[in-house]
Image (tube, rainbow, N blue to C red; front, side, top):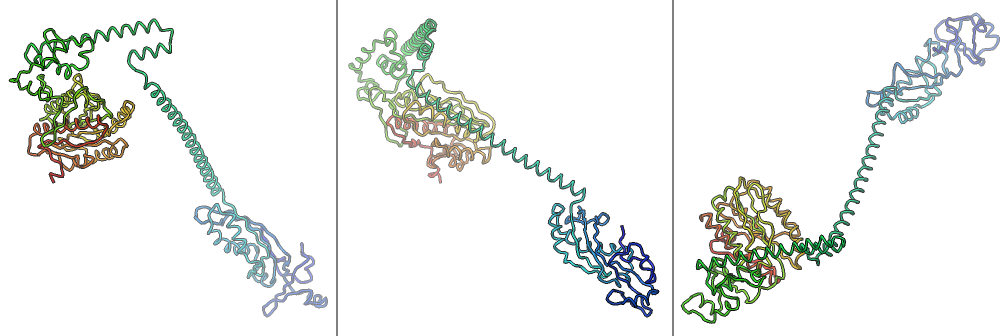
Length: 588
């Protein structure tokens, strides 16, 4: 819709103004002059006579009233800050004529063609400073920047202007999608937090249940600690809880007792046959029978009357035999001096001696002392392909350690021994146990690879678990001791060091005696030992069998010292190092 402020398209005589249709109450008459220029008629400037005399003069009639128009910008939308989206603008403008001559001179058929371009030129720079979702802020900035009234060169004055902005359809769709995405993201975050909270709540409940279960198990173990948990004790416990099973329980007890007596008889018969054989072959003499019964057969030999093979004499006669000594016999001379002879069955003498360079240590006479504490010992042997030349010697070292411990009942009561081997993996060849003559020595086989990390991981699993188990059996448990024999260098780089450090950080960290033989890097041995003074090595020029023999002596002497310390209620660890093994400090 166009707006023209000139009411007559062509000049008309002044007398015909009353015939013009829609003549407003407030208007101005503009006369063109012959010499150029314009003259404006107004009630103040012309009298009635002047109007009558000039009634034939041509003129233009200009509307002086106030005009309000509202327009929506569609063909020239306002772009926002990102230049990709647009604002839809609605402009409400009010204008009036302040210079009728200028209006006639411009001869605009539609004055809005001058009003809107002027406003758009002022609005557009402000709109370009705001994002598409900041329409309200842009609208406030635009309306605040318009300094009204605004005169136009076409003779009009803008006395009112109000601009309203909103995103166009594409921008509204973009904002709607972004808002929905933000709402979905926020809902997802809230659901995520809720799931995390519920999970933590469930885990906390599980922790409480587990702690309660552990506490119940601990109380149950404490209550059962005074109960003899053998077959007989279990039957009695079952009978106390289920009195109706009396007949069946008694039958089981009778069977168990018969089987136990039969096993004891069979064992005693085997022992009798073994002694008879040893006497027949001249391995054992009659004078050695008491020591044989005490050192080899053990307390079980006298469990059912102290049976001995015919011809060997009763225990009392055996004790009376030393009263008739044979001076020509070195063994009898040793007996008269109070030093027991080496047993003829090939075992190590019960009163163990220290290695060369160490002071002797004698065992007390009489029955073995009861151990005050327990000393767990772990023997870790390298059975990689590098150790193929000394596997036999390693087996012999384990057999020698068994003989030493079995011949020292007081030490055996305090020592608990475990054997582990490693190559590419780590294996427990003998679980932690009290060594006796009946303990089986594990067979050793070499494997491929040489990785240290698995054995330290296995120690990290075994040492805490078995230490806790031993603490339930004894009032004092010494810090575990690990004897680590390295023959080959590790193939797992520095990975084993992390497992070693984790083991050393544990509250039950063991003392590690590290021994390197062959071509093992001595720096690796020093890193394994804890503390560092427990790092020893054999001469690199010595053969592997000779080095293993030296390690065997170190193992036997040190374990004996550990056991005796535990018996005495001490936890002293001192290396009983034989000749041929040197500390790395001595090597340096």
